[in-house]
Structures are given as structure tokens and as C-alpha cells.
Image (spheres, rainbow, N blue to C red):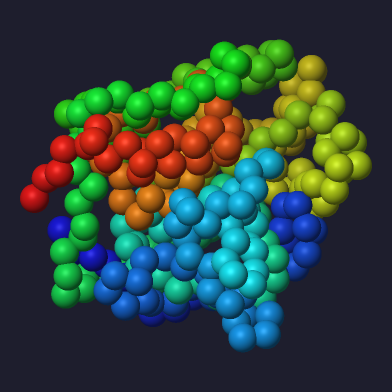
Amino acid sequence: MTQRTLKSEFELSGIGLHSGEQTRVRVLPAEVGEGRYFVRIDLPGAPIIPAKIEAVCQTALSTELAGIDAQIRTVEHLLAALAGMGADNARIEVDGPEVPLLDGSAQVWVEAIAHTGLVPQESKRTSSGVLEQPIWVRHGDAFAAALPSAETRFSYGIDFEEQAIGNQWYSWSPEAESFATAIAPARTFGLARQVDQLRQAGLIKGGTLENALVCDRSGWLNPPLRFANEPVRHKILDLVGDLSLLGTWPKAHYLAYKASHNLHVQLALALKSQAWAVKETS
């Protein structure tokens, strides 16, 4: 398959989850081989921040990237949308420190990409091969893994005390279900008992019932859900966004349980460093 980029640019704006700041994002076509990258147009010299796993600088409740002179936070939903829709090369201009949360999912990004359209470019997409040896990272009872598989698949499990969430598992195959319908609409979620603590820590300043699902011990504060298992589908969305920092990922079954952005990134780094576990394909 050849590389692809956007037919033309599009622009969206909104509030950042953690900063609470209003930012505007322009997503533009990029040349073959440039990959996906951010440009902080609000800073002197418009510094570039590559959407690469080596650029990750922080993973507390979002994924943050750093370049030489700038950082950009909460990149995972937009990157998941670009990867899930098949956009290999994209220039992402942002006029602030954080990508806006929009409705808490990747759906608005996906709709904008679909409306703009993609075009093939005159170069083949680089293959990341097929995983031949399992790779695991863990912290306590949480883990993220990549397992040899005949197809690419993402499976995720979560377990919360709140009965409305409870224990959920979901397994998604890009070959069987489209990212746009099965994963992109799933919104980020949080627990009411953690809100005050997180805000005191300087986080989720822009979080509202309009851009995140919130649950307490009695149930959801802002139903209805888009899927009965919307929370675990959103975790797959986050995993896709974080793994997209590899550029392309090897064919494998990606499996996670009670994981986090930190474990997602650790898995991506392990995949990159343990090249011996991957068989190259033409």
C-alpha cells in the first residue's frame, strides 16, 4: 500500500483537557516520508515536535510530546484518528500547548478527515513486519503486551469498583470493524471521586460533562453512553494513538489490562528496541 496524506487542510478548535486553554488546530497535507508531526505556531520560530515514540516526555492522564523548544499535550486522540483512517503524513499546526479534547472521543477528528479525504502518494508505506516473539511490559497487575498473530488485533480489559463500569473486555480487529464506527466515537471517562484531587494537582482544568463521561458509585452522571462498553473502547482508542508513535506497528495481537498511557508507551518502546522479535516482510 502506498503512503497517504490529506487532500486538503481542515481546522478545528476547542478546550484542552488539562490546560483548560482554547486552542486551534490546522491539519494539513505533508510530503512523502515526513510522517505525522506537530508545529507550535504560537511560539517563536514555530518549533516542530515529531509524533514519534522518542519524543514522549510525559504520560500522566495523557500523552505529551517534546521537541527541542516546545511541548504538545494530549495528542493521542488526534493521532489515533489519523492512524485509524490511514493518514501516514500530516502537518499539525497548533496555537497552544494542548490539542483540544472536543467531545472526548476521536469522532470529530475522524469526521473531518473523512470529509477532507485522503490521497495516495508516490511511495510505498514502510512495513513494520510481523511479530514473532511476545513482548510484555507490566506494573503490578496491569500489563500491555504484543503477541504473535495472523492478524492485527487490539484487545483490552478494564476493572473498576464503580458498578456502572465494572469489568469490561473488548477485542477489535481493524480488518473486521472500521475504526470510524467501532472505536472513534468512544469518549474519555473519569471517576467523580477523583475530580477534586486531579484539579488540585493542576490536571483536567478543561474537563466537563460535555467532553468526558463521569461515573460515581450510583452510575453515570451524563448518560446515555454511545456503546454499552464505551469506556473499554476508549482505552483501545488511546492504545492506538500511543502505538501510532511508532509510525507503523508490526502485525500482532496487542493486549492490555488495566493499562495506562505509560504502559502503552513502554510497550511501543519495547517494540522499537526489540527488533529481533519482528520478522521483516516485503
